[in-house]
Figure 1: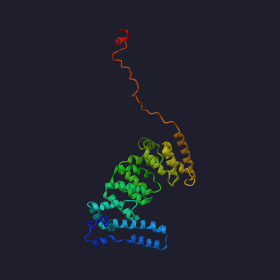
Figure 2 (figure 1 turned 60 degrees about the vertical axis):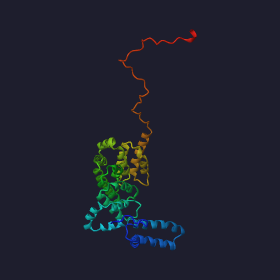
Figure 3 (figure 1 turned 90 degrees about the horizontal axis):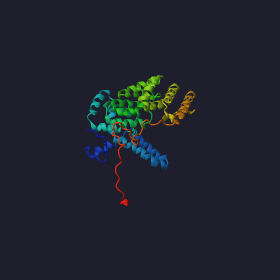
Length: 325
């Protein structure tokens, strides 16, 4: 039986107290290092460090003990001969599935390789409930190319179409090509192939693609172009800036102004961005177009030619005035 969470308040998973004690205190190398750091701080650090450091150190230790089965699982996967068997077993064990979902927490103390393995496992298992944790991981975890690429790949394997709007911006990630290629593949799997193909044509100068994107995917295109605006390659950034200008994307004004900074952009990119900013600022000051819908609820009804005419009828009789009696 696999234990997912180890707690001193729930010892039913263990035969006796001795076994529980030995299992909880099977600390690994990271826990040992944490205690050494704490001891050094106690000897040489100030009072402030002694107050703050133990919170972090014991948090790491608790996490490592809490998800001990997860680490044991990851270690067992190092044997390629057992990998297929273990994946098959995981499909029927809810306990380890819960442990894998906990392993997607961006705040969990995992090494780079351990986090990559967890993401790969949920992708192979196609865990539907892992879609939201993976999206959270993409938003909150630092930009590590392999981790983000694997998370996007896993979302494609899971096949949750609701995740597509969260991935469209990565189509403009030209600084990390593995992330962009994972986004291309995943969006195709999720039914967004038309958008992907049109965006790729747009980035090589196809004007017809811009028409398709403006009519069907305007907001998604702006998200991807805004990320492409920060490409290290000047030609890509210039293409993205010009496309944002042709889309009248006043939503991207803030990023375009930031790209005009001489510290962050080469001269040719700054020049194009300034031209686009001037155009969009002028466009933003134009009056809004009139609403095509007209409220006719309070307008008088038009005359009906087939209705009975009442203009020539005599007026109804008035009651006699009491003063005339």
